[in-house]
Image 1 (cartoon, rainbow, N blue to C red):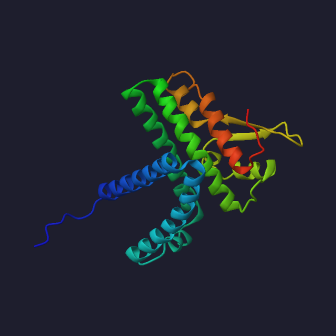
Image 2: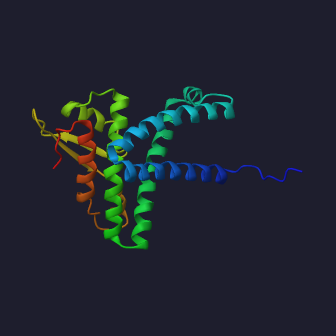
Length: 213
């Protein structure tokens, strides 16, 4: 007799939790063993293959392709889904920071945070280059285009100002993290070191000649 319990939402969530954790651990250890550049190349190969495998498995399980599901939904629902996933990404970043802060202290949490961004930002830039089909060195125009497809581009309010032939200023005008802290009566999070790490890694991946200050 089959005594297996029906699959629940919690079961599906647990699968996603372990899937993303395992994928991330592979990426982290690849950076440790091979270096960031080689690890990004490996992620490109593995990620492209994994997307096709996952899409095929979901199609067989649901009897319809994920793309067909999105095509049949109204655009507002699709936009809300995208926003829900992006904001969940940001929430995951936040709860990890808080967990490390509670386990250790703010300094340790910031160190872990900065290390994560030093690896994720180049990955995010690589994905932007693939999506936008940017050349190896896309210049400032390539950087501006890539910034528009970042996760944060859909979550925070931002602007590009003071443009010259060789530079521009990128400014966050409304950051979800800082706004949430203000609502809770907390001081601003000291994000400068993390921000420089994040945007330096992103910019250099778009074009190695670009400097972020």
